[in-house]
Length: 301
Image (cartoon, rainbow, N blue to C red):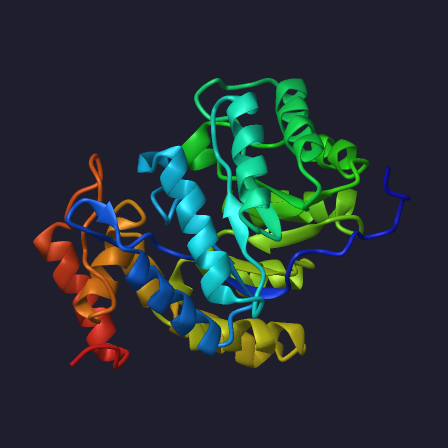
């Protein structure tokens, strides 16, 4: 059990990239993944998060997830921690995926709320409790009610903080008032990570430890710099950096993630824009708006 007021060592601070899963000919392109990992680490990110929403985890089989996590861990070579996604609507499956991730070398796991089942708060608590008890590594909850239909109650965080290896939350509700309540109830005993790129600076102001970012797939250096400005208390500069990234953030979420981010990476020549159904190619008009933003930022010619 945690002692009140004591923070367990959290997996990372700063910018972690929710990395895409590159594909070619219907299969995972592991060689390309290695290149993407190197690019991120060279840009200064603090951690990598494979097999999340951005990594199309819901379309990957269990063996592919194992291999992707192993590949990411091997490519990172100890330079940054790997925080692996372990999402399932079944608690037992989520726990087994967390075990797989631990065995593959992940430093922590990111566990989504139990979607579709619409669990009660007791069920949500028990879901995370079982995942935590299945592994020795830190467990980060992922709260994204827009996708799951479930939002973790603030009271539940206090209960979760009594579990030894519960480390924090990736918070993607988009509700700063809700994050304030989390910080008030449990902020001294767990890490809060922004799960919304456009709210990175505001959530830092509420005590966040970093961001799990989609934008950093495209502009890792700029997201790293934004986090650095926040961490060093340079509020005005952080606000300007945050606002400057808004057009790209909006373009990258003009269609369902990760369609736009893969489209952008393909335009930059970093991977293909191949995805698995039901995800499909970006609508041409929205793709052109994305490319226009990228040209304005000097990301493409």
